[in-house]
Image (cartoon, rainbow, N blue to C red; front, side, top):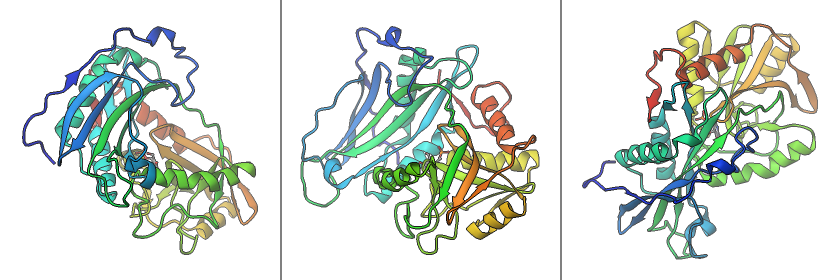
Length: 356
Ligand SMILES: Cc1ncc(COP(=O)(O)O)c(C=O)c1O
């Protein structure tokens, strides 16, 4: 979607920065926000009044449709700082395309590309000091859209708010994960919204994930709703399996989020010569490989942690431990990704995007 007329972005700067009050070494993920935020309203059939203003509360009526029907989508991306103070995004166009794909599925109007990039540039230029240098430090970027029409009829809202908020984060160490393969609950179904970053997809995972946590697992690996035999993805991660030296991951579909990290890892694997297969992965195949000692690694991929290694999984009340290995693909991939994201190497893929 493009703009018919250029919209001028209004900027209202905060009078006093809160940055000196922040302990950047001890951040709890997603709890601290920068000085500014971006907002833009959809009214009378058009996006209007794009504004950057100090981070703060919104005033929204209780009848706003987002509260009743969950008409809301979001994105997750990061900004990284190099040693010279440059600020970079990683494949930001993919996130814009994905939020618009999510919006379409939720009957929300798409957001214009030019405005998205203009907002990103201006906002990150204003809050660039909040992007701390050093591996693991980054600024988590949360664009989202909510339905704001004051009306409780169960139909698409005629008004929306698109926002971007920014949260400084430290390296995300999930530790080694113990995961449970889903046998009863499902995250997504054919024809549903699994491929969208729809707010409700995440709310619906909380209860079954809590049940798994009570049993000592940190994450659930979701399977297809019909047979619980195809391995799909985890809470906020796509999943890779290494059988002997071959990496396998499920193809994206209308049930699986098309992860930016996932597709970047597939491209890196192809470039550096790691055999990779994008195909249906079954539970029995993985259980058999584990029993034969051929299952070398499982890891999740996503913006938050880049790679989260799994060290054990459970299926039908049996726990399968994965071996410690010295030539881990997870370690190799993480380095390849971080080197590109922090501007430490040439970027042969054209993924790095300079904002400041
Ligand atoms: C359900 C789900 N799967 C996978 C991912 C990983 O996607 P990405 O690599 O774009 O962060 C995410 C995170 O955005 C997610 O929410």
